[in-house]
Amino acid sequence: MLGLDARAARYTWTAVAVLLLVSTVYLVRQTLFVFVIALLFAYLLSPLVDLLDRVLPGSRTRTPALVVAYVLVIGGLVLGSIGLGARVADEAKNLAARFSQLTAPTPAADTNQPYLDNAINFVQSLIREHVGDIAAFAPRFGWRALTAAGDLIYVVIIPILSFFFLKDGRAMWTALLDLVSVGTARGVIEDIAHDTNVLLAQYMRALTVLSLFTFTSFAIYFSVTNVPYGLLLAAVAAILEFIPMVGPLTAAVTILLVSGLSGYPHVLWTLIFLGVYRVFQDYVVSPRLMSHGMQLHPLLVMFGVFAGGELGGVAGTILSVPVLAFIRILYLRLQRARRALELTEAGR
Picture (cartoon, rainbow, N blue to C red):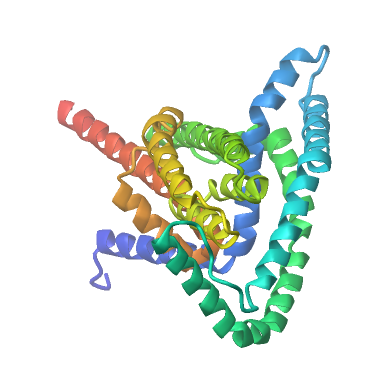
């Protein structure tokens, strides 16, 4: 009656709704990130909870299995922090003391590698020249550290949220799915949910295995070759393994800088080890662990990592790969549903 095409109006309102949804997600991105991390942590614990749920006798709910799983995980983390964590903390303190010495004039490094000596001396001169800027930045860094310390509350909140995801996740999903009437749309949503469930479960388990494998390999090599602060550097590399592409590169640069500035004479062999390990990790181990649902081109991954970093900082970088994989799943499932609908209409 007003001269508006119903189809155009429907598309317009759909576009507006999508824009409002994207804007809302961006505004609550920090809270959403906490819930997503809790969900990923739940996926990480899910195999252990399922195993305990099958083993524990006479259990009608998952609560006993959840409690036992949390006791085992928290107990393991406490025992690991008592032994391994203490050594890593000692190496971190020694490295901090060593780094402070770089601001004072020191004799030229002697690694029997002239090109490496020049690089180390250049880095040392930059640190000494900008010591005033570092000192001026210290108060601001301290304030940021205090702000970050306030975020430690999430260390408590995330396991609690994961507990509820594991306990009531299936019931919540069933309730949400009941809002959709039986038909093609419900089938598509179920397919997308199934693929996403497999994707997230495999992605988190793969990242955990890669991180543990990195820590073990680096710790053994650094121990055998007497790389300074080897356990600390192995722990840093294992943590950064959770950040796609940028994390391993940052870990490699950090390892080379720390070992070089510490006067380690075999930095070149460390560089060769890092290169060989990266090739083995990226082309042998990782493809086997992430074989399903993660078929993303390296250029697309690189774009997602940098775009996620600009939009959400470290959080956006960490979540970039699973978000891209989810978009891929969404596109493929919707395209498959559209083709099935076209074939059905053509058959009529």
